[in-house]
Length: 241
Image 1 (cartoon, one colour):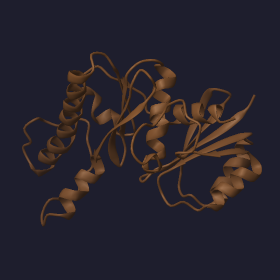
Image 2: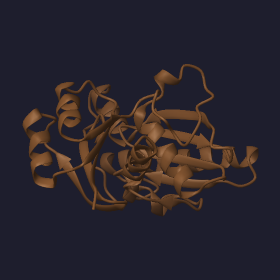
Image 3: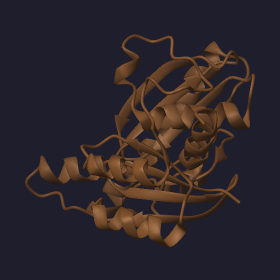
């Protein structure tokens, strides 16, 4: 049984998924991206393979250690992918977006797919039935919106998200919750509706740790999977063996 470590270094969290063959076994959130933390993972899980998707300036020694002790692949625009990227400057496409698109075409081949990633930013990523990544859009994510209103005003507080909030806020906290969370839900529905006017039939996949705050407020039918990026990373790693 082959063990693969799939690393996702995002702006908010550093995570790794452990696969035994094609089965996702566990997801670990790292406290930091230190060399010791990576070595401890290698010692614990004894992986034969590894892949890294990073959108931050991580310690490049991590890549050296993974390459020395596993069959390592760093995801970038030169990777072999199950999608093509007929967009300008493919080197500027985030590795996380490539992984999400790869997961979509792996799960739903030969179909139009809109993948929505809820992270530090919201990314909208569209692949057509020919497995071409056409691009999409990027907007501020949930925590970014909360922080922006706090940091760019004199009196608005920073608050934690909540699952239950009213449409019509009755105090500052509930006004902020309604504005951010319901506002994001309506944005997502609006983007889906805009795509619907251009494409008759497509799948909508949504992923990210903020999923629980939004799924009950979306009117459109979606497929929610918090581990979609890891499934895409595993598929890309297999594609590059």
